[in-house]
Image (cartoon, rainbow, N blue to C red; front, side):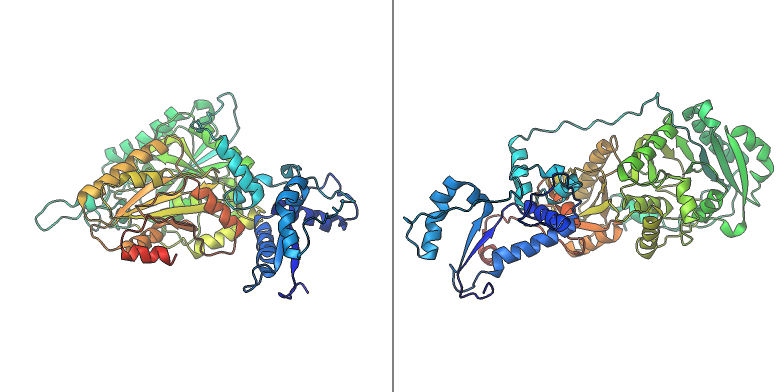
Length: 600
């Protein structure tokens, strides 16, 4: 009968869909429905995807299933909330219901009384749902009544949030830890790049404005056997040792160990190990680097890490200069914070230091021995000498266990963006290698579901003098800390003034952001020609390492909550491959735009 569209039906439903779902869970748990009151101490964990699936079924049933595409008034809907308000029902609902039934409105209808109170309309569901905060985050920008009402109340009492202040490390709190510094050193000279750093036009003028720092990273250095003079080598290493001595108190240096890797045929360092022992201000372990590992920095790091028995492992080079005192204590505290917030074992994480030579890039990551013990090595065997730093950061970011410690600054005087002492060898680790190790990490950490969300924003930019729009996009933020975001501004206009304007905007905002966090870094990509929006989007897509990409244009004004809205939707629809939001178009101004508006 219910399926028969010729039969008139009165459908009683409830607007508060979350309360309905909780009531269903209570009935399933107790086996009671409309017979006894529910126990007061029942609590539940509600998966966002499960609740979204219920919403889809519930709304299909009560909004579509019993409606006829031909007869408009074959079904009359009454909601539970309207029945609870007798005055509202008598004035607004009852006359229409009588007309629907063909009954004289003067006939008084008797009301039914609930024999058993199943639920309290004023009940605080946040005390019933154990993961209420997570559920609220996922549905806060949806049309679910429970959360939309909260959103409206928040908007009414909204006040500008004060700037978040950095939590200063408690100097009185000392967390005991031991450290291993992986320090491969060699006396080879920096070799010239295989291609010039900046292209030149036919008239000899530099095209530096079209130079792209990311393309520079992919240029190969020619391997060289040339050896620097002794003075240069010792000056370089001495600078690192002095920075280590000045930034780590002597009492903590007692817990440091420097694992020094030296090429077996190095003419400068191999014969001078006694001098190295005097220069390095902590315990030293020497490891010989075989010729088959020359220039393969990631594999050298693996070799050195296998000799470590300490709590924390950090990857340095002799060209590094540490700038901030107390950096080990800040990093240890950050690892404890990661474990507390993510629920992962202590050590399941990665902390990146603030490399001033290559801002926004997670160079010189710090990992815990937990990582090496579980994975059996520091980096997968496929890595040669490029990609190890960002790989470690991206691996743990999916679990909300990667962090920047911007108060731990350093400078990289040779490596990073410029030339290197080896031939750079890039591999594509973003697909199979990353996914395979994510599955391993999930098992090692006994984590049922990764919590971190990596979402990049790609914006093709052709329009000039529109930095206000780009700045508005670049200031988008999520309200949670386990959301990792990078911006990719793809400049598709060869105009040098436009390129420089976008670069200047990115530099200004990045400098401010790096005072707080390394997240939300803005990358500017340009290739000196106009190749169209599709090419620009593909370029940003290829540079991104994120799991999700939000494509915006340089003339849109996104709502400030767009990141939270999309991340919430990702958790509600875990099997979705594409999510699309609503766009408000400007007023039509010609035939073409009028046609678009008409067919919307």
